[in-house]
Amino acid sequence: MSRVGSDNVSANERLMTSASISSVSITEPMDRMPPGPSESVLRQTISFRRGRQHYLPLMHDRYGDIVTLRVVPGGPFVILRDPEHIKEVFRGAPEVFHAGEGNSLLVPIVGRHSLLTLDAPDHKPARKRMMPPFHHDRILDLTTTMREIAEQEARSWPVGEPVRFLDRAYALTLEIMVRVVFGVDDVRRAAELSRALRRVSDISLSDILVWIRPELGRVWPWRKVVRNLEHADALIYAEIARRRRDPERSRRTDVLSMLVESEPDDEVVRDEVMTLLVAGHETTAVALAWLFERLLRHPDVLARVREGLDDPKDAYRTAVFKEALRVRPVIHNVARRLTEPIELGGYRLPAGVAVLPSVGAVQCDPRLWGADAKRFRPERWLEGSPPQNAWIPFGGGVRRCIGAMFAQVEVETVLAGVLRAVELRAVDPGDEGSAMNHITMIPRRGARVSVVRRLRS
Image 1 (cartoon, rainbow, N blue to C red):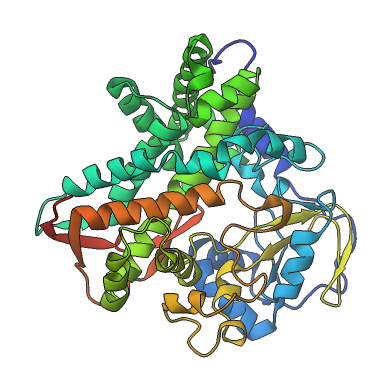
Image 2 (cartoon, rainbow, N blue to C red):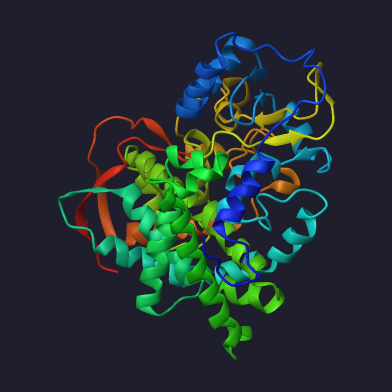
């Protein structure tokens, strides 16, 4: 397998690393474990991998707030719905609650220096290094470009014809990624990089087999997975080299320039920008699709959002963003792997077990959110603070998503930009179901919309 530069780790080497750290060993007998289903590991695995949005709440309703699932690879899992248990996990010692190990299957894409795959003590300095590009004022400086991209994209949609909003959101957020994060202004290079990054992010469940069995990287069809990674790496390293030669890079505002300015190691920069792709591109696109799916089925909410489009700090627009992520979470669980035994919820959990706060289950628990917990009602965010540790779309604690503010600003900016450019309606009647895609939960029909008319800016 070819290498992208003599000092940088190839995709095939990252595959070997992923396979080695994704294996799990339980160091103590699993006594006093929480209850869970008695069905076979295969059935539990299929139910979890294909439909966790339904499976996890069902398991909680059947067995309680803390449940054991036997799932491969990576199991056993202990899933959590009680906010107090979730708080213990998020506030637990990073040396005991390893999040990086829970993301080990991402190593081939994001690399060994990624915030997603690092654990204590390496995670803290890496997170500190990544903080400057996500300062609130720096993010707000990028909103003009985000808005322009959103308006241009929306005005390209045909009037009266169905459009899969999810597909267009993928393209839109990827363009924002290439122009705002990578800072690539050249049209040809931006298009080539976008195509390469999209191939990398568009991973099927069968492709993940090559993560577990790296030798498949030499066999069709998995060979293309490794080739796509290598091609994307080559383009990213070329952009890093180009930026290092740029005498004006210290004045640029894109994330890549700031990282290059502060980090001399190309491989570290590569892993950090790839992390932003994985953590920020697809998840943000899916969040946008769900937001519009909910918004277009609630005309009273849509009308109120339109009233506040000229207010850059409209509290109701923020409430819509938060409520959409509450009732339609993009990620249904986060994970921490235990490096030593702990007591949690009256049970003794051995080292090696992964504990998973159930994002979807806790965010729609009627004990916490009231009888209308599953209803899309943004006003609840203007009526008071939500229950603590019951709204966790970005995780929590020292591992809370570093790009949470960036994602919120991007989604709210794109929302306003699209609504300024076009008037939309939902194509399909009724609420849209969900489907698992990679690690995200997407609208099953892609959140199909139709442009009623184009609006003047």
